[in-house]
Length: 333
Image (cartoon, rainbow, N blue to C red; front, side, top):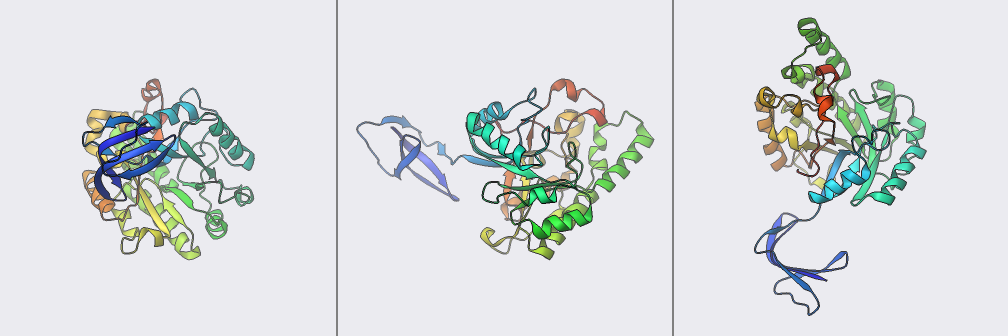
């Protein structure tokens, strides 16, 4: 039994001073001047006691990419950083596109995860029937990559998207970047720079237009079909107009996430940090970074996440096109 004394306890937007009595794996009591004859006492000396964080977007690399990380190692890192629950993405090898592969991830996490967990079912252009077999009570949602991704996970067929948005009864989480826009911009960059595209071109290739075009399509589909939509890693000020803050969160059918890196960095940082801040969607111009935190505080953006995705430093030494996007953040967010 543990008694934490003199903490500033954070809960539901309010900070109160008091004590926490912990018995086993549960908080037994919260209040002022608590005591217990058998409790070990830890004096917080006014430090914050914060609920464990939920990270709704991580890439833990299992199966198929476990040379970079695995559910055990990344969940351990999460807990070390105060993230006690995670929602993990389906773009592994093989991608999580069947019920059997989804169940295998749950079984693996049950064996080794130190944190609470859930996994997204993955969508492709040709697995709609498999998606519809998913138990909505057993997953955090369906992940749709409306922009390039690993393997066979790009969903760019409009009929498929309409089918998914109209039939899927659970939350749909989307990565929104218009693939045609990205490819067109990449060809322009290759025409100028050849294979030596500078990292500063990343937000030009994966630009504001591509993000807005895809996000607005997702919102339009969700409104058309009444879908529960969650758009991941918003990176532009333009997209903020797609989201509401005039109704309570509990009433929203369309919500949005912002990632730590889009709050912390802007395109001026590429000169110093290079590919270490290469993410998809790209870190963009300062005016976009400047708009995101106020939107979060004003409840237009609803979730902060990391998009934790670790790579070897040797991979980051590759040229632009071969250098992977993503960074390890779950322990430090």
